[in-house]
Image (cartoon, rainbow, N blue to C red; front, side, top):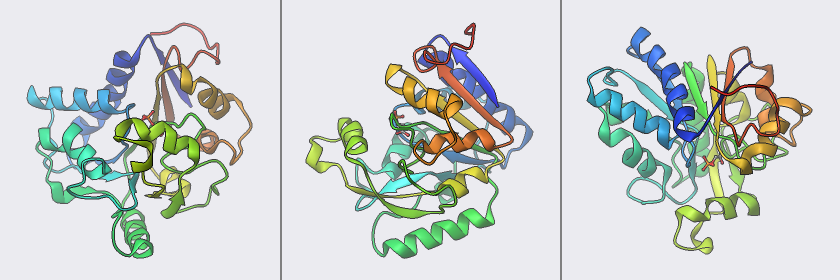
Length: 245
Ligand code: PGA
């Protein structure tokens, strides 16, 4: 496992972009696994800025997002589909038909099965991940089996509170989501987990130094053959690994 510690969020984002760019240059039809939330916004800004400079193209790139809220989707401002459009897809030359998220509406079990089928047929080149303050990856909350595939999940009160900042009020936050499972995530060729801020320090410590246990879903990533953690100093503050970039 590689650990990159950066001074701050911006440097974390550009380190992550360096890895993505290297892939895009080598493989113009790369398959990217993408995440939502505060953590990857800076990476997406780097992707957009470099695209605008003409350095990279997303014409043949295909993306798979980790999750979607149940009840929200296309046209709903707080859906992850709209998040991705606002922070990335609308600003690059990607074909929206090549961007995939689970459907949070309609027959939910069918939505899980359909997404899972797509993921089985693909090989994600780089999976981008954030980490929850409770160690979750995507919406795989503590206790989720490491063998899990795409499934419906009841969000924990903590995750609902953490995500309330994206909504007008707490009661607007959906209580369920559809998420890639941990087994889907582990299938990616390369995993890049980013974390920023002191509120992630415990989760990062448990993920990297703690026991490998379903109590900290991110701890399983250590068994992946190509995982890079990009952490700002605050997120890495419990690790004491040495100098930062
Ligand atoms: P955040 O969420 O990027 O908004 O901190 C990360 C996560 O919960 O996985």
